[in-house]
Image (cartoon, rainbow, N blue to C red):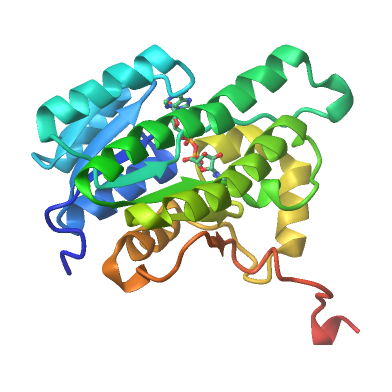
Amino acid sequence: MTQRLAGKVALVTGAARGIGFAVAAAFVREGATVVVADLNGAGAAEAAASLGESAMPVTVDVADPDSVAAMMAAILSAHGRVDILVNNAGIGANTPFLETSLADWNRIIGVNLTGAFMVAQACAREMVRTGGGKIINIASLSGQRGGNGRAAYGSAKAGLELLTKVMAVELAHANINVNNIAPGAIETEIAKAMHDRATRAAYAARIPMTRYGTPEEIADAAVFLCSDEARYIHGHTLNVDGGFREAGLMFTRDAG
Ligand SMILES: NC(=O)c1ccc[n+]([C@@H]2O[C@H](COP(=O)([O-])OP(=O)(O)OC[C@H]3O[C@@H](n4cnc5c(N)ncnc54)[C@H](O)[C@@H]3O)[C@@H](O)[C@H]2O)c1
């Protein structure tokens, strides 16, 4: 245990399970007090209980401004500040462009982009008041590359990556450090829902490291970006994807 986040108050959205939970657990290990926020209130309570006294559950729908305001009020009443935000809550679908309904589009943009915007703005206002902080937005490889079935999801994540850059430019003066993590294929419940057999085969052929990542591998990157060691990394997108984004021609020598 290195205690790199000792004394910090961190909010992780979508932390009842998956990547968010792994980030919350890593932050607790590093000495932070963590707010485990999720739409699934019972899941958030269970997750927070498993992390011990340093974790506090909050039920929130990040797509609902009143719910975000209530979450902020609960955090400020309990801890008086928020030093770190990991904007992780997200939903996905594997729906072809021609079949994407306006309702699907609005729902996915509403959580993944508008929700992240609202939570980031609320936290950044507090960080301005208290003298600084760290914000990580969890975007996606799907926001960088055109992939099957990702019209709404990929567009939301591309928007989130650009929002990260604007926030980095505008918030640097307030000592707020803003970065983006773009996970590749990570073995979680959302991946189970979005990745059918064809998707898994396509990923298998295109990931140089030839495997899906784990939630803990995203959490390790989040700890680094929230630590003092990353203080001059700003407005950056860190892909944690086993090399997917950078890969070009790939073959095995013995195949020829
Ligand atoms: N798993 C992957 O392969 C992958 C790849 C790239 C990006 N991501 C992104 O990582 C993040 C976490 O994904 P995951 O794989 O852990 O998914 P997950 O489905 O396992 O967990 C997502 C969590 O977010 C919560 N959530 C959903 N809507 C919410 C809302 N409106 N308000 C608050 N909480 C809400 C869910 O209840 C759930 O606990 C998401 O933003 C996702 O888009 C995941």
